Length: 391
Image (cartoon, rainbow, N blue to C red; front, side, top):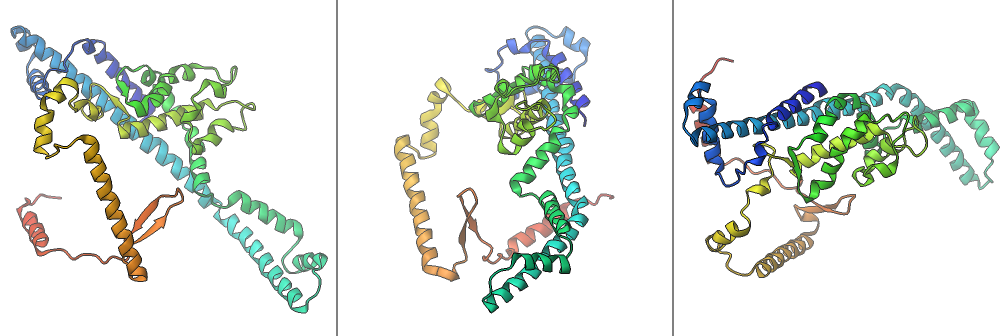
């Protein structure tokens, strides 16, 4: 999986899209019917399709081309998802971890020096406190140079710790994004094809991402050495905190300039996430389509609304139904809170406040349930039914 293979996959999409089948309105044709026609057309030889009567011939050819187009788009996006995960995200994470492992020996030496300083000064301060004497800074530094080493050596150890200490979660993510920015050459071959593709669409949550993707072709062709990219020329709201250092603070660029390579990879990461949520989707597609497109709307929904709601026993107004669900949920939370308070330290459940302020339910003290006999019987039965195959 490489950037070149992704570019070839997008070229295949463009070749099939050149038939402009999007001009044909197929939304009223049942998907199962289209799939059946495509299966028949793909299984038929060209002379048989040529001899087919109209409108069957047109229907077969149209469904075949639509099927091939959807398959090509699905294949391209599968390659994109695999490329982002395997060639970019995983590689960047391994590189970040490798840098930390390589620094461990120097970190251990510096840590021992700082540890010795702490122990020495802690003992000296305890003696000063017991004697009730005034603190003599000169005597502390003299003891340091005598027992530990030169002051310059201690200062060097402190600086080394500042440099090598494993970063916190936020800094670790920022370092990973710095590594990702260096993978721009991997994605550069397909940026233009991806940004110019008409196969992608977006829901409200993905419109900003899709707009940024469509601006990538121009950014990839820009000579940033002659004309540096400026913050006003990009969508800064798409740059999350973990990317800000890589995008806006590259020391190799002029002050105030944006790192084009880092921003392009940042946009691709946002596209990768949006595709996973289907905030950005593809059409036509089988695996990356918009799931909301299959929901009934307008006159179609109004025609069956009464039957659906009656079948679900939802005959009360929407606002009243939702208000009732809110009251029931709130009552359940209140009841659980009261029971936890009554149980005190004996409670099997507890809540933990996460850094973002959200509550997490902790069930570590709950004992595991044993497997019922029916499950063990089912496992033995299904295992016996499986055929013996050579390994």
